[in-house]
Image (spheres, rainbow, N blue to C red):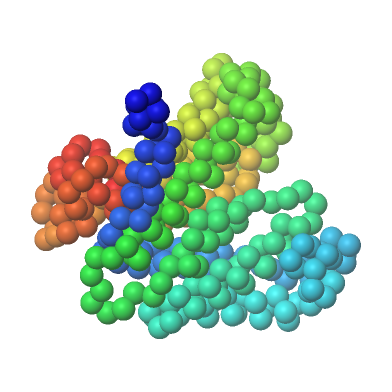
Length: 319
């Protein structure tokens, strides 16, 4: 009798794991997958086209040699090889946009972008400007091609949700690492004021010195950034707060550029790509009041990650 009672007790962690698994693999229409694949391809294409990769060829061999999986590349990497990778990546983006072999085109663009970004970030301090789009795009490498007229299926639901979870996790970990290494002093101490004074703003040192010397302002900036990063798991789990998260992330990264001269446009562009693909959509017909979930995309059930079952009309429900 005791053994039966013990066996019948609920296991919260197991139940939570099952619910998350069901949410991730719930059926969905292919619209979010097609939108996300297209938007992420545009982000990668923009980076490939606007970055001057040629300086990699001028770096000493010691800085670009034996780079993990890139150790087979000649050192230094010849400029024609860099140009070939850029052109091939842009060709992959074009295939995605033209919807001709979009799966192969996406993989080609991602692989070329990975190699170029890896070579670019290998010299000196590790640069993570291109980390987020590469990481968020990774689950879509395994997403199937969408045939014409495809309906609801589990195959279309999991890739956007997986990308959404990756985006939330990366942002959360950036905030968690700040707490791990510096604690709350990162936000409430003199850390941000010191960083601002060291920054190289495109608007000159007057801006950063003014911000650093204004009482409480550096702490407010740091606290806001930390709260956004730590709250990413919640803000991106709820469909209605995904676009506001992208707005806040854009403001944070643009303020980093304005104060420090560091370009994190791949991050906020990736946040927008995921938010627009998995967030609320305008009601068909463009009627007023329009940021609503489409009934065809939301079956009855409990709330979960993008496109997963949610109760129709539930306020702030995740999808």
